[in-house]
Image (cartoon, rainbow, N blue to C red; front, side, top):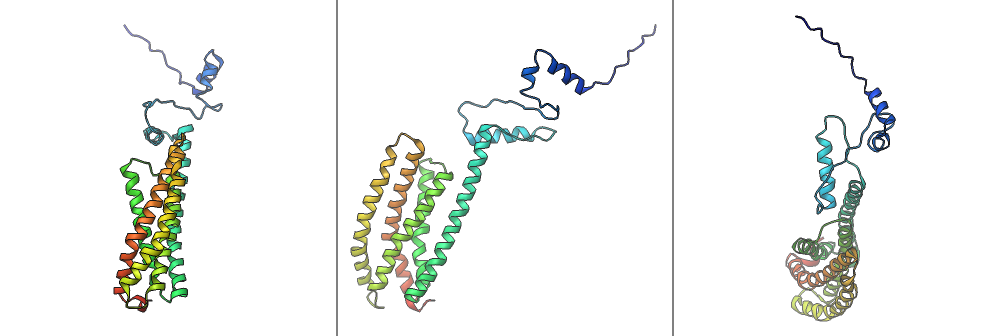
Length: 254
């Protein structure tokens, strides 16, 4: 006995989609398929406690597993992409500001004190301040994002200000031989003024820590920490850098 097999007609995807859209499920299908049937939306679930970065990473991983071209999208993914772009811009701006501050300090000390190397001395406490702030952020589990990166730029300005006051006062007091006396006058005189400035500025901005808005709370915390570290490095690191500068030749350096 022989059985005749029925020849299957090739499927027409467009016809299938036409029937789907014409059915009672058409409104629901239109939420997942485009009108030209060339693109589809895939919805996936993530853990409820996943962060925005984790959700965006999961979308990219899911898109990478498809054989056809796929792109992760959605409000969370878009917000994360924007945040990443802002963060990259903030980091680039921070590096540019640091390089610009170094060039400016070298040039201005060269013009005013005939020693461009004092600009490097002035820059040392700033680098220490940035390192301390980043380390503290890691210690207290505060994220490094666009907002905190921007605050670091403000810390750069504060550190430059505090350190410049200390360095310039030392140069005014130093006659080439009275290193200890010049340092004492600098720390006791200018250091006292910086102490008052630090306390008022840190306490005034630090009040934002009590804000009910998390972003403002983070801003106040990082600002207060940056101000305190800028003061401490100006008082402790700057004198040490100045001593090294004197031992290397002081005003004889370029």
